Length: 204
Image (tube, rainbow, N blue to C red):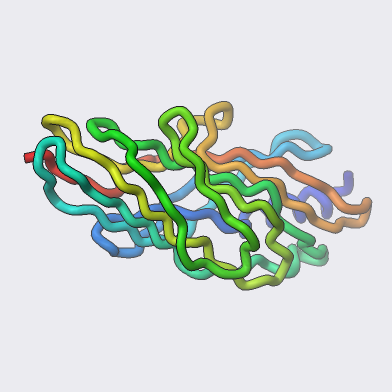
């Protein structure tokens, strides 16, 4: 692969959107470390995106609570240097069910430009997936995620993003770019670093 193609892939990673949670409905970025698998080997990048999240400050022991995550609108870049960004596909974002709580239900609402979005509860983790692709240059917004929980008997309930390493990612997707050697798919794994508490609810 030419140096120009390598630069294109690095730039592609740098502008690919990613989503993070913020506490008390205040938008704030969280940085993901990402690693793409390419024909020239691993390519690293950092990604960030603003999202707001809300949760109650306190909840009674064994009581019900709701965490709401609302990603901000975004736009897929149309170009990466001299190359066309064709699409982002196979998008999957993980949000663990917080400690000291029990999962009850979850739902998605709103969103635009993402086709069909689904959320599933898989072994203590919520996984938000997009069945379609995000075309280069397209405007989009992920749907709002609402999670209903039941508090435990004591302690705090802290919502956090999933992922601890490239081998235990909290975000996966594939980016496709048209380069001088043809279209290149780059499967990508990301995790938040640092990964602070996003919302904190005290069990009273």
